[in-house]
Amino acid sequence: MKVLIIGGGGREHALAWSCAQAARVSQVLVAPGNAGTAREPKVHNAAVAAEDTAGLVALAARERVDLTIVGPEGPLVAGVVDAFEQAGLKCFGPRRAPAQLEGSKAFTKEFLSRHRIPTARSATFTQASFDEGWVRAQRTPLVVKASGLAAGKGVVIAASLTEALAAARAMFAGQFGAAGNEVVVEEFLPGEEASFIVMADGEHILPLASSQDHKRLQDGDAGPNTGGMGAYSPAPVVTPAQHQRIMREVIEPAVRGLCADGMPYTGFLYAGIMVAPDGTPNVLEFNCRLGDPETQPLLMRLESDLTALCEAALAGRLDQVSAAWDPRAALGVVMAAAGYPDQVRTGDVIEGLARAAALPGKIFHAGTRLAGDRVLTSGGRVLCAVGLGDSVGTAQTQAYQLIEPIHFRGMQLRRDIGYHAIRRERACGAAPGRD
Ligand code: AMP
Image (cartoon, rainbow, N blue to C red):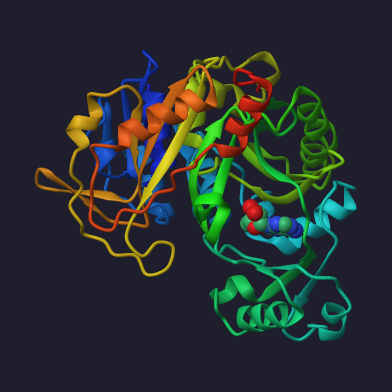
């Protein structure tokens, strides 16, 4: 069996590595991939950009690919799955219409309110309809969001009304390009965040193990928002009761609602949830793909054949399969380039990868490229070191040990990934919890 992974980040390295574990998989192509996927057994890079829909379809047809899995949101929102389907090729991910759940926060807020799924109170504006009076009547802090895709950067948590108004005006003025043509302004929700990711086949739902990521750049959740500086699985905030609430109040109505709205959802569906102090699972956002870096620890724990799960979903048979998980916890720490998340410097030599490869755990590559024998930084998030352990605490120890030999100029990382879970573990002397 031949598999194609679309994308070139850490999530795609983890997807390629996971698919390559299956004995029936003979080859995994990654378009375009990175230095990590270039060196992975059974895995090969193909020099086709993730945005080049026609090139990807041609590649899959030429290479007789049996299954394609789409990593990033851009190609999904642009309709890559529709193009593969038209060419008679199997491609796991949502079509363009339901991918709007990620492509348009304005669409999602309307969808959530129509289907009575809990979320922050909000209003959506264009530059022409912007109502400063409405904003001035709100309590601070306020959250201002560019509606379209902004690589995780289009959200401003404004402490004051002045800041909120300035953020909205900057978005309308083109700070995030067309993504800011519509702006969502919503109330700030207190609570603890959790990522809840499922596979869906249009009708049935297979929840994946729970996970949680750290969005802020610096320790203690300080500094600017990023694409994610680390993640772990399972996330103890998702207790069995919380799991049931999220399924009943968020995921099931969302999948049913999309079907009722004439756009059945097949693919990974990621709900970013803020669990309120009273336990209400408020939706912060939907993503139409796996999270990065949640995928890296998540797939380290997946014992089932991911390709078989995707095939079952494409055949509408997700109710007939289950996913088996390593009971241990996994924790991933991102090593980011100098300047991230703003002006990123690239081209720095990464040292110590061979020494790290001899240690327990796994290093997934993200923004890396090969230059002869050397591996250079080529993006904001460069590597993700994933450790496994009987608790989130021991997984964290293994992940940081894995990082010790690694060095590149200006490397940035957090030293406290998993602290919420570790604090809980210490408080109740507990092992990882449930998925
Ligand atoms: P989003 O891309 O909408 O998930 O927002 C990015 C991050 O901003 C989230 O992971 C939260 O940490 C934060 N955030 C977004 N919306 C809210 C909200 N209404 N209240 C509090 N924090 C929020």
